[in-house]
Length: 345
Image 1 (tube, rainbow, N blue to C red):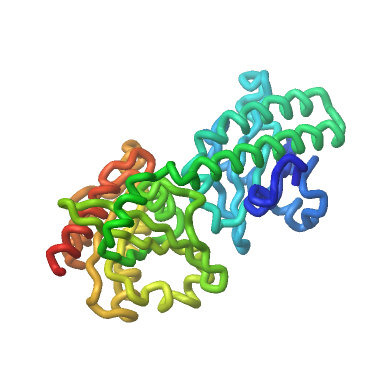
Image 2: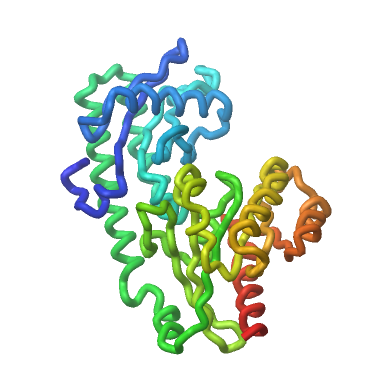
């Protein structure tokens, strides 16, 4: 990666690609870093990004997080529109694409707003280069500048978050010997599990990753009725690895959060399977909660409160409508667990 990014940001940034799209729907990688990105990746990623835009043209001028099928990476893409977009019928010229390991999901969900201006600035510069038929050398210079600035921002955010003064409340609560609770977060891919964890903990860098298992573990201490409770929150880092190691994931869990997407009926239907999987591993030794996430997407919600409540009632779970984006009801879920643990102690 760019020389201005230190080892920390280099570990997070797996690649940057500038891709162009032509009128025949051909997506081509024009410039990229590092220089040794595989040819297979350089062919697969631009095509995937173009297909995503083709089916979701409203994604222009905002960042989109895209899973990469069959890989443990994700793409953060900004679609580049021509300056005379009205004449071009809403077409896109290309995309500026960042590749990162899926274990770093939390960083990009937590700080996505901080990255939008950076992507927008360099996408505008790339748009000009594409319109003037600039060569690959000029495009690579812009990609390098983008990569360097991105690395600097990541390092700054990490330094700020890990500063001893960043979360003084956590330090104070830790000194009071809090009750400890392992919480696992379950649900289909893309329902917002990681976003919920990030919204609650407010920490994207301060987590532990167990690479041989495939899980992210975040921590946060809260005070409930004056009693400190420390949550250790286990989040899946890659569904394939989870299928192999889920018994390790469930072991010792005191609470389970089942998350579905209010804009996806399939994700609600799958909740029963997740619940049964937990029961098969640890029986009925846990307290749980059902979360209908993305309630902020009002126009896209397809699941009524009655439908969700019926599933919650069948599984004997409390139901919360949440928004990982706005934070609605996220804290309430953990305070519900805290109350339950305190009453049982």
